[in-house]
Image (cartoon, rainbow, N blue to C red; front, side):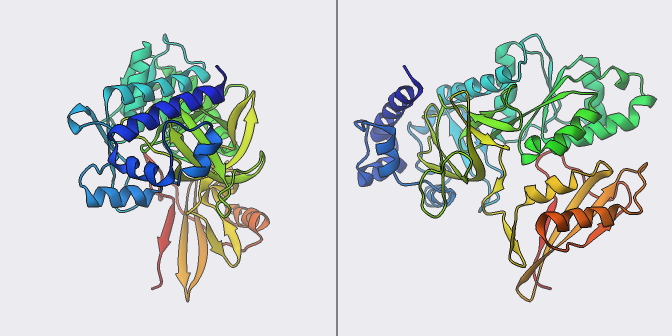
Amino acid sequence: MDLSSEQLSKLQALLAELRKGNEFYRSRMEAAGVDESIDSLDEFSEKMPFTTKMDLVWDREESPPYGTNLTYPVGRYSRLCQSSGTTRGPLPWLDTEESWSAMLDCWDRVYEAAEIGPDQAIFFAFSFGPFLGFWTAFESATRRGNLSIPGGGLSSLARLQAMATHRARVLCCTPTYALRLGELLEERQGDDEILAKVAIEKIVVAGEPGGSIPEVRERLAELWNGARVFDHHGMTEVGPVTYEHAEKPLSLCVIEEAYLAEVIDRETHREVADGEKGELVLTTLTRTACPLLRYRTGDLVEKSSFDGKLCLEGGILGRVDDMVVIRGVNIYPTAVEKVIRGFSEVAEFQVKQTTRQSMAELEVTIEPYEKSTHDSLAERVGRALQDAFTLRIPVHVVDSGALPRFEFKSKRWVKESDS
């Protein structure tokens, strides 16, 4: 069975389940004239309306706490996770054992693509809160037979020591935290005999776009003695979505047996061509207990292909709602990070967005490594930003250690309203 036929078969089975028991989608499907008798994926995309984040927020507000997007009775669900809550607070998500197992299957694809065998120990530098990605990554690894080492509740130094003690060869965390751990390792390795035994060979990152930014990857490889970086992305709402193929770096391949993916033009809502940018839209094919049909993820991506697979060139380029207009120029946070990370002297940075008299402005604060010479660093970073965006953006330098460090998703972009 080819991929399209497999996707259609799974979609038809999903729609049949939803029509029987999912109040949220049953009415939407009836209004759109969509059921399991659809003949093609194109028919589904043409008839079925999008699902948005606000649709989910409103549903939970009207039917708290879990909303009506449940295919089965609540008593059948055994897992609860929640989104990070950037829009109207955290959203809870329930899963049955079957839907949870389907997401572990997706993480298996991530590990396989990174060529991580079951004999390799994996260290998870997460706090293990309610976010889905932590738990699915960990449980998939244990199911595969990997020695899975949880790092919750430990300091950064204790995590490095645990990697050495338990001979971890793989690290899973955000790109930001991998940078932080690598900096600490570089700083303390000569003073700690245990840290000299840290031998991470591969780093699987997620949670931020940095994993597909060349400058970030180069810095990670430098800090971790040549370790190979593999990017991945997912969302609590849908699960693990993509993986980086060993032969296709700086690009993410969609796990198409689990997701029907579209990349749409935000104005026309039509599928874009290869090489064009658009918003990623996903339909879950195997997470049937709390599914999403044509979900507008808000992720900006560039459509491409590799070996017959749908890929996202450069990974997640940013959030479509994160774009800011500065004096008529469209700027995405990831584009700013790409420029700043091109300077190896920069340990950390922060961007402040202010609005004065209804006009948005940016200024950048950079923190150099203590050992670096940075007399001209602000000037050079400012010039690079001006070359990239044709804008003069003020750049300030602060002392080493002055800017905050992050374990989970970074918060480098600070917005301030009119004073």
